[in-house]
Length: 532
Image 1 (cartoon, rainbow, N blue to C red):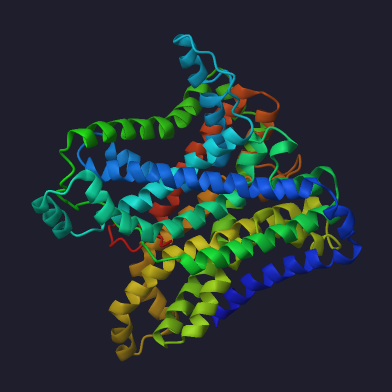
Image 2 (image 1 turned 30 degrees about the vertical axis):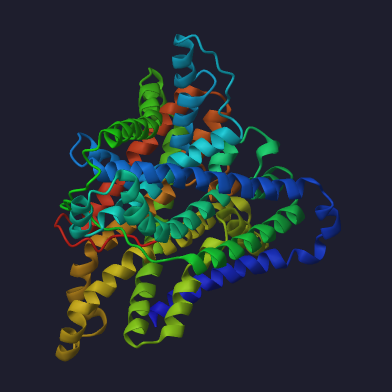
């Protein structure tokens, strides 16, 4: 019953938001909106930037993953792998500020080129900046997935290929590529969806209306133009395209799970090849520079006399408190919905209820079809008759952030609960243990570690989110990402750097504290992995 209640609540909120959008349909002049030549351009550009971001991320991730798989002993390998694992929880505005500092017109890259007498007119604002930021977030994720796939190959494969004397090109063609080809559709679909619904990156680095995506166009229509009709039409178009993409990618998806990459030793035939040594060294240095330079730029830029002044300022204190309240409440909501749904999924699987378990799994991920701004806008249109923006804002931000984290948490909790069920279900059934005692005494010690990781992930994602708060943020309701955006837009770079550094530090501390307090310090099996 708790599982069905949680699932019904999740679907109910989606339907409520859709109802708020549909209720506006009679007042919409569709002919006038579709006659606007901007709409086809916005759709084309949204698909273009998402496609290019996915293509670049996947194309670069393959050589990076192969280099990390071949070079297992160099200093800093563990750090690069950890950076690849936490790319999703780095606050977007922190990365945007760092990328602008490194790749901007007066950034580190152009300063380096000027030393060698080469002047560049490159600007980080526009399509190029958006692609760089998307690749910064998605390249490490794809690299980690490909690396885990390659390192899942048994050692016998490499011993046989070494005995046969296979060349590096043959190793890639016959061994690695067939495996990577089975993994690419899933991760490519995920990256495409993330870039298609990207908001903060496009808003900060878009550089103007020319580079607006559907998500940014919805924000502009609702926040600045107060054109509800146009915002609703754009929202419906975005939902329709997202639904088509989900159906397309789900039909090509093949399961693959994150596994531990430690203590797996494989003797590859291409490890000692001189050409691969040179290529791998170049690739690893390039990857490290690309991932570390924006974070280092934020750290160095924040070391200014304005540090103490920013920390003690009322806007920073208010934004910090709001961020903590929103992130903790959203994480608690996400976990309270995800745990019952994950246990219900386990029960349906054990009962061989294939259709109902498929319905539950698909329905729980439908929230991804509703981008944050669209979901928040639909709920606001329903509730605005009962309360104003100042009263609803914080509750809508908590609700949307919490619900959007549910699909991610389910991908963490479901494998852990399934693995625990295989060990304890028969014994607990024979002893007659069920209900709350079964969860408290049997399951919780088994799933405590992944549950702590899931809760920490949800809190950190909400802490760094710049989606819904941009729509409902006011002078009285502001978060640290929104504060960075406002400082960034006002060209108060030193203050923005300080807030960005403190936000990044706060995210890591929050993640560590929640995972330690909830998950505990003891080591367990790697059931906390996320499946794609």
